[in-house]
Amino acid sequence: MPEPLQIHVPEEDRFSRFRLIGWWDQSRLRAAKVMVVGAGALGNEIIKNLALLGVGHILICDKDRIEHSNLSRSILYRAEDAGKPKAHVAAEAARRIYPEIIAHAFDGDIVHDLGMGAFRWADLVIGGLDNRLARLTINRHCTRLGKPWIDGAIEQIQGVARVFLPGGPCYECTMSQRDWQVLAARRSCNLLSRAEMEAGKTPTTPTISAVIAGVQCQEAVKLLHGLPTIGGKGWVFDGHSTEAYQTEYQRKPDCLSHDTIDRIVELDATGETITFRRILDLAQGETNSVKSLELPRDVLEKFACPRCNKSEFVGGSLGKVKPDRAMCPDCGVERHVNVINYIAGDSPYLDLTPAAMGLPAMDVLIARGRAETIGFELTGDAPAALGELVGGGLDLQ
Image 1 (tube, rainbow, N blue to C red):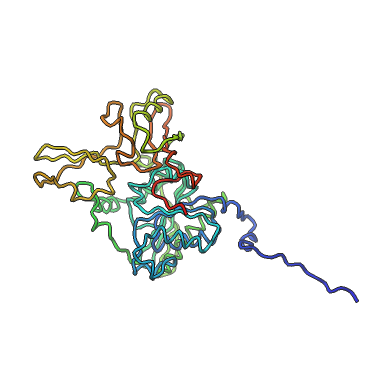
Image 2 (cartoon, helix red, strand yellow):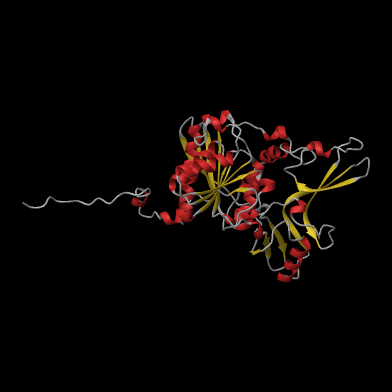
């Protein structure tokens, strides 16, 4: 009697269905490093998708705590998570979805307190934000470093996903006069953060989050595979009519975000150990036409009282100093806020460290020579546990 026919069906692994797509390369996703800025409704869907797709490395950035109102729109959070940092809880949830993912969390303000080196670490950045200033910060860092980023925005049951590529139109190119007015309103007259202005509430639903995040992550997969994307365009979805269309953006030649760094010099030093004088000396060794170091962000230099004529050196992050600190302790008058964004060769702060001036770990200082623009990265801040180029306040689980 003949032996029964045996058909061997290979055991399916976690990503076997993805591999049925002809161009799919799971190894690209496993090696990918993606920064996700914002872990709210949109960010939850983005993080969930990246974990399901098998992206190997993610850095989740958010400065907020979980509230009960997040539970109806955020798949990664539970009632017992209320009060916990969104970034940390989202990173742990991503590990539960895909145990092999290396998920890091930054619990802080990306505008003032996340070094540019974190953006250099990433292959691409995905934004899930309702904050124009944060978008502008992402845009300028990504443009300087030649990194693509994918923005998403939602409100009620409408949304847009858009892809910004190096050399093309950028987020700032799309900003209207109204955008700049709203951005200005989020800052007090003395440039310090108004807590009440930071708590804006945007009405959204989990359905529109899923739609826009799905398109963002699909574009991310295409970018990581080297496939064509909607670079320089936005995909707009109207949930009322279920109609969708693309809009194309134009690159503005006078846009201030079109500034690039030609090359990066990695410094085997931390922001707490190296001085501006030493970095300037190194910059002049690379190109003797350098006269100053440009800081990648405004930092608070000092308070100056117009009545007492007294000054108080601060050397701190604009994001961490609140408006009430600006009141003069002697006469009660609101003091002027002096900010700086460069250190010249005759600066009184040459012998201070970047950390002493309020710059975050892993930041990049910029030296502009006649022939090229060079970035000096505080690579020594990178924690050894990561083995990559991210540092400063990170959860390295």
